[in-house]
Length: 242
Image 1 (cartoon, one colour):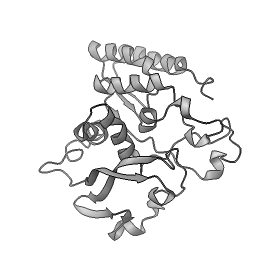
Image 2 (tube, helix red, strand yellow; image 1 turned 135 degrees about the horizontal axis):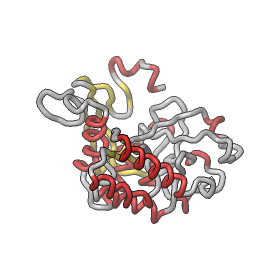
Image 3 (cartoon, helix red, strand yellow; image 1 turned 180 degrees about the vertical axis):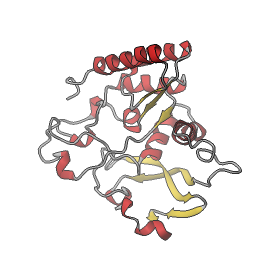
């Protein structure tokens, strides 16, 4: 599967979009960047003054092709997970601010669609459900490379809010902003189990991993909606979490 979707496929698509951006002057956003080979051209495009922003995803910054077992379709996504060297290039892209933000690209599906019993990458659903584990996965990787929670807040809250036009009221803890925030214990350790995946189908490439960093409480516009592993209040009965 990885060999059928080489770096060149991403590079050609990005080159095309950059050339069109130069010609027509539109706002360009590169979604779920998976190849580190594109960073040089993206850096040059930004230096040139093109209106370009770039995102990547937690799975590209955490997983590596060398450790994905044959038939492990829970790791299938598009573009695919690339090798360890590529992963480190993406982290360098974040450090250099060529990559602006990190988003989940949350793409859940029933286990049957992942073809877990068959291990068929060609017919399995291509997507990773990342919402529940995005913050601890990012914290585990970021802390090892000298980044802080402030960096993660910029990548995963402030920059996405600005990109989507919500930057005047979301993405920061400040007067006049919606009180959306989490209480996070950066030292707490836990193992990823089904009960910690707060989405309908408990399929995850992180299952069984031991991670550091635990969300203790979540507030939405100042209201407590999640505490100690459970949704509370009005959020407890909402269908989106099942």
